[in-house]
Image (cartoon, rainbow, N blue to C red):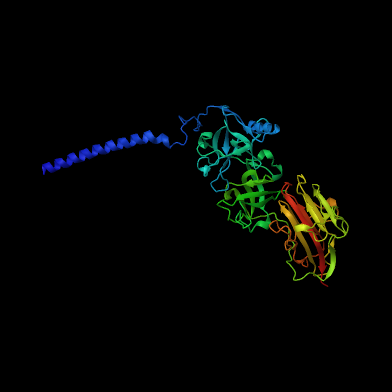
Length: 495
C-alpha cells in the first residue's frame, strides 16, 4: 500500500510539473506570435489619441494636385498622367465605398475629408482606386483611413471618373492582387464620415467619388412596383429615378445586378438617401450609387406625388369630336402652332416641332416631336398644351392619342391637366398641374419604331374647364436624352 501511494504521488507531481511547463510554453508562444495577428506591422506604441497610422516613408501630396496633374496632361494631349517610379509621394484619404453588398466591384472610392468642409486651396474631392481584388471591404471598410503610394501609378479617367491605378500605355489598368497591400496601406483610424447634404441641382463634377446625402427624396411613382435591379430589362445595372420633393429635380439611382438587394422592391416612401456621385458606364450622365439598401431611408409614408385625375379607361372613344389634331397642316422642323395649341419652352432650346420620317422609326405622315439629345442644354422642359376644354357642356368625354420614341432614356413625357391655368404662358409654371395616369405613354423599354395607343382615357368624372398638356422633361444630361413623338390626338364625347 505504501509503494502504491508513493507511486501515485510521484506520478501526480510529474504531471503537475509537465502541465506548468506546457502552460508556460503556451503563454510564451502566444506572446511571440501575437504581433502576427495585426494587419499592418508598422504599429508601435499608440499615440495619446489612441490612433496611430503606419510609418510612411515619402512626401504627402493632396487630391487637388492629382486632379491638376491629369488636367495638365490632358491639356498637352495625353489622356493620362504617369507618376514617375522614383517620385516618392503618397496621398491619404477615407474610404466611402463598400463592396460588402455587391454594389461596388473591384474598386475603392476615397475622399480627402471626413466631412463636407471645403476651401479654395483644399477642396473636398474624391478618387477611385481600381483594384483587381474582390471583398475589398474586408480590409478597407467604410470610413477606413488609407495611404496610397503613388510612385509608378497612373492618373486617368475610367467611364468619366477620375481613377488612380496602374497604367498600360494610355490606358488605366487595375492594381493587381500581389501588390495592392503595398500600394493601398491601411491606417489605424476608422472615421465617421459626414455626407455632404446638397440639392441635386447643386451637384457638380467636384462631387464625383464623394459621399453625398440627398434629402426630401422619393422614387418616381411610376416605378414603385419595381425592384432595385431585378427586372428582366435590367442588364448589368438597374436605373431608377429618384426625385426631389423640394424642386422636382431628378437623378438616376444605379444598382448593380450583382448587388444582394437587387431583387428588393424599391422603397415606397420619402426621406433621405446616402451614396456616392458617379457616372454611368458610358459616361453619358450622372448617377447615384448606394453602398447598401439601408442607405435608402425613405421611412416617411408622406409622398409628394402630383394630384391625379383618374377616371380609368372607357370601353370606346366618344362619338362626337371636341378637339383633334394629326399635325398634317404643320410645317416640318417648325414649332407646332395654331389650332389653339400653346407651345411653350420652359427651359432649354427645344420645343415640340413638326417632322416627317420614314424607315424603321417612321412618323404617321407628319407628327409632333420633341427631344434634347445633344442639345447641350443644361435643362430641357417643353410643353404642348391644348385649348380649353369645357367638361360641363357635355358628358362622356374621352381622350386618345399615340406616342412613339427614339431611345428616350433619361428624358420623360407626362400627360398633365390643369383646371386653374389662365391660358397665358407667364402663368404655366405657377398653375396647378395634375397627372392623367390612365393613359399609356410609350416607355423606353418599348420598341423605338412602334406607335402605341394611349387607350380610351375617360375624362367623364371631371368637371369644369381644363387644359391638357404633353410635357417633355430632359434629364439635364443631353447626351443621354432621346426624343418623343406624338400624333392623332382626339378629344370626343358621347351625346
